[in-house]
Length: 360
Image (tube, rainbow, N blue to C red):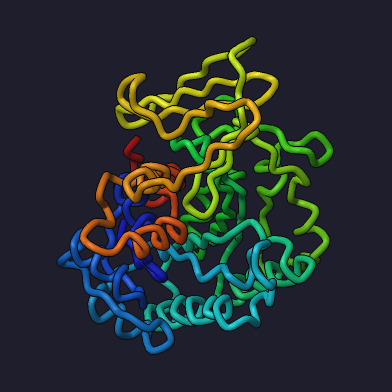
């Protein structure tokens, strides 16, 4: 399955989908530092800079088959941490450039390609402008010819990486044959499968399940329905751990009544020592390797994560973003897609794209 990657960043999305059995055939990324990373890992893939000057015709000239468009348009104007200008903001308005590329490819191929779009963004996209912005996103997908669209909120910490990173993934299926093979829901997350999302606070429902909604052709959806799909609480285990702005913040811990939890990923162990006061988190190949450990019961320990630690939090190989300033590496990790989440999504799609077999 061949992937067009828009707003590629340093290829976290691409990496995850390729691990699921897909292949990146074209990339578009403006940032010159990120492009150097892409050139290192995908030296033979054609690439473009400014999406506003990219055309569907140019993509097809270099990559005549596009099964999947994977993209995460800039989130700054949709984020809860930003000014929330919405889709009319200078950054997030680039969504319309991405949908333009999809339309141009569909027109040039008589609707054959792409078959699927995967759009990723911050959870704030669901509530921006009281849900109207996400409603507009759904409308644009529908107008571009989507048979149906389904979205789900997924948290990276349940896909093998030790960070809480909730993102909304919108799957739009354009090809009727592929749509006919899609189960409902297309992205099944439950207690029995990898990627289980802990229950949220919205009427006792699972936050991810409650936002797994489908919209078919010419079906209207109002903003309040979108906002209502979100859980009010983002309080996840480990409850006192925060990974924010490339720092890890740990609440104090005392020695009494502590419980040890060990999470393994890529040969590393994350040890969480938790009690009523707080937690200590250690990450390493043995017990002597630490990210941080609290020592004073009345203080908070804060230390900047190293770039490699940030890469591991994203599920990327060590030094994926190396050979550049740390400032750029931190930014790229912060803007990237957690590859294990993308891999899981890619695996679900491989099961319906030409009855493909997913790579676990």
